[in-house]
Amino acid sequence: MSPHARNLVLFDIDGTLLRTEGVGVAAMLRAFTRLHGERGFSFEGVEIAGALDGLLFARMMAQHGLPADDAAHAEFQRVYGDELSRALTPSVTRRMAGTLELVAALREAGAAVGLLTGNYEHTAHLKIGVAGFESAHFPFGAFGADGPSRRHLTPVAIDRASAHLGRPFDPARVTIIGDTPHDIDCAKAHGCRAIGVGTGPYAPERLRQVGADLAVADLSETAQILDFMLGAA
Image (cartoon, rainbow, N blue to C red; front, side, top):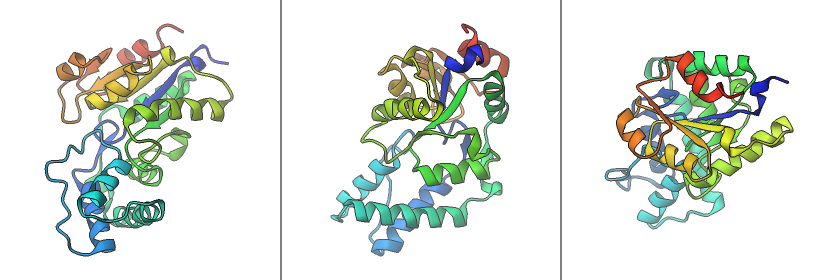
């Protein structure tokens, strides 16, 4: 077994691995309208960056006095996935610099690689596929319907990595990479390391201020980032 097999790296998606320039949000709003008619659905005043899709669903339904039970949530996920698959194309999807190379280098080194994202699982894989990743690059993870907050996703992702690979992971050897303070918080709350990347709405300095162990402009400096994560084999 590679000496780096004890390392687990969990990637956020939107703003970290890729950007869809609002296509996902627009598809979500169309799904609400398709299911419930014209009610003026809007995310105005709602922080989208770092949010969980499941929480956005619950808030929107509550705002409009609509039921948010499991059946309604499942139907929304289905329709949202349909809307997103229609709208999401390579022309509106931008893979962030260095991400494909970093994922490949981590896997080559023997590290475990997964996702920790606010996206639903099916829409997460839809997005990464359009951006040029393979689902096999991220065989496990935690997603936007797996808990009530991003902090709840960290132990879910670690447990799924352990179950998938048949070995435990020490949180001290888990690194979460993301573009918002929420990504940093969900790492530090569980004793994990955090890399903040400035390809989303927050500058590296801001991510450093909220606790990122390493903050970079983007993920193109593969050697530097690998050394940070894997240097202590």
